[in-house]
Length: 249
Image (cartoon, rainbow, N blue to C red; front, side):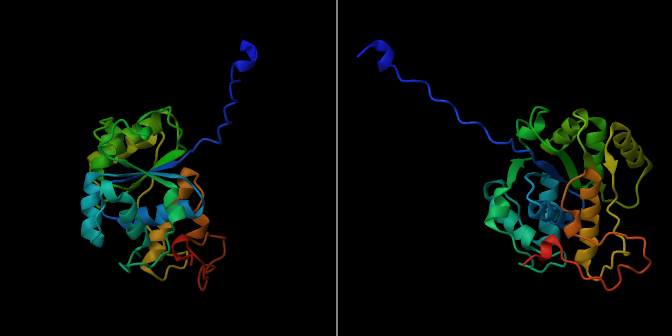
């Protein structure tokens, strides 16, 4: 047998599939963890990949507001329980499947070598919900003291959508200046201010409204399953029954 026939032919490498392009969702320590849960649920219902970063302060807020832990070593189990919880505290109010969780990648807020810390990492954009004044200041000043702040800085420098759902009242002059800095850098500043024209009847409706507006501001899908849009008809939302991502059976 000749040497030419004895050599094995190099195999053709399989063509790679489309790259995973997640939405980065940062959860900071401000009150309002139900906003983050509603937003993540809507993205998952829309079939969107999510990279989740939960700050150390956010874990304390989540524990205080819901009694639920969020642990790096058990993030999948903890996230499932969190996403299934209603804004009114009802456990298992919403269905979260294993397929939903497969769309999520969790990064520790301490991991500054994580994917979202680099501009070469493919991401569609980032939403910080809720955004504390500490997170606002850190991003505005370019501190990058944790992965949440670093990922936001990368989002800005790469000219990707960044939505900052600030949750604080009243706002100091210093925070207002930080928010103007973020606006001028290209971010969308979206206060966590629910509206009532969409026919809100439950605390979950108010939470879903804010999450939907944040998704719209980022250009992300999923908002339509959360709230009834304004159509120009006075009273049009009254009596409207609409499903939400969190109420899907």
